[in-house]
Length: 182
Image (tube, rainbow, N blue to C red; front, side, top):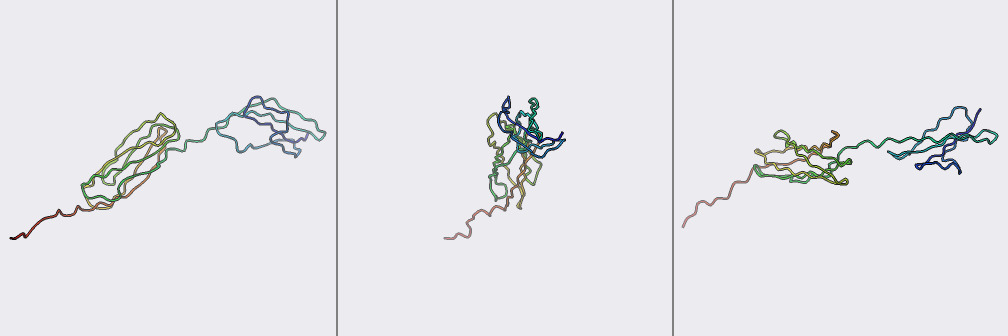
């Protein structure tokens, strides 16, 4: 027998079916299919489905429940990188990487200076989502422009990267005094 489609939906148990349904499809069909949209992630829903025939007879199912999946872990984010954009040869530069992880897990940091292998650093978190920081220092032996790559990895293995450039110049010749005469 053809009937309309009705759904009473709630995040609270039991579902109140005394009022109008949350969703109603007035088309009278023998096979019912309704896609629920805009549900909250990681939430238990309770539902009662029903139908009404052309004579106004309403029938309702027993209550069912289901849980929506959580949002996927979007991974860490590098919030900022602070450090110099120019240095002299053999002068030490210091960069601070600020990153956060929505899962509040420990972050591993890596940096590729563009002139030697990467190094690792680890920071731990046991607080609400917050920005974790790691500070790195490096000196370049030769003049040139170097591209620095900062990588942050969370405990799930998801990564974020950010890059910076630094121009390294030769140190100016020291001042000298010459040709002094009396």
